Length: 316
Image (cartoon, rainbow, N blue to C red):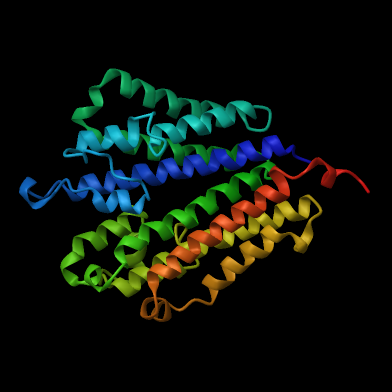
C-alpha cells in the first residue's frame, strides 16, 4: 500500500503541473488575441484572464505582454504563477523520487531549470509567447513520459486524480466570465469565443463537431458536456471517478468510499446534464457548483487517504 506521504506528493505533482499548463495556455492565447488589435482598443486588457484564473489583479495591472508574462509566468513570489506551480511540483517530485521514474524526474527538472534560466537571462522579453509554449510543451511531455514509464498502480492513480480534479475545476472557472450574463453572449464577441475555445485547445475539435459556426450554447455544451474531448468538464469528471474508484479498490474502501460517491455524483450530473437547461436557469450557479463539488471530492480524498488518523489504519 502506498504511503500517505507519497500519495499526497503525487497528487499535488499533477495538480500543480495541470495548473501551470492551464495558466500558460491562457496567457499564450490572451497574448495572441492582442496581436491584431491596436493599443488604443484595449489590446492588453487582461481583466478576463485574471477572472478566469480566479486570481486577484495586481495593484498596477500589466500594460504589456512582457509585464503579463513576468507576473503570471515567471514571478516565483506570486503563488498563482506558472513558475511557482512548477517549483512546487518539482519539490513534491523530489520527495518521492523512489515512486516516479528517472525520466519523469529529469523532465520536470528540465522545465524548472529552463524557467529559471529564462528569468535570469532576461532575454525572453522579446519573445514572451515562447515562454508559455515552452512550459506547455514541457508539461505535455512530462505527462506522456509518466504514462509510458510509470507503473499504472496506486501512485499513478493519485496522479490521475489530481490532474483531472484540477482540470474539471479550472475549465468550469474558465467558462464563468463568458456565461455571466446575456451581454457576454452577443455575436460581437466572436473573437472572445474563439479565444475561449483556443484556451482549452478546443477550436479544431469544436469545428469538427459543429463546423465553424460559433454559438455560445454549442461552445458551452462542448466544453461542459462532451464525453470525448479531453478538456471538457464531463471527460475530466469521468477520469476523476475512474481514478478514485481504482484507489478505493486498491485500498479496500470499495464503493463505500465517500470520495468515490462524490466523484460519481459529479460525473452523473454531467452525464445527464442538458445545456439548454443549464443556460436557461443560472449558468454561473451551475459552474460555481462544479467548483464546490470538486472541492468536496478533494476534501474527501484527503480525509480518507492522506490525512486520516493512524488509528483508522490499524487492524481491529
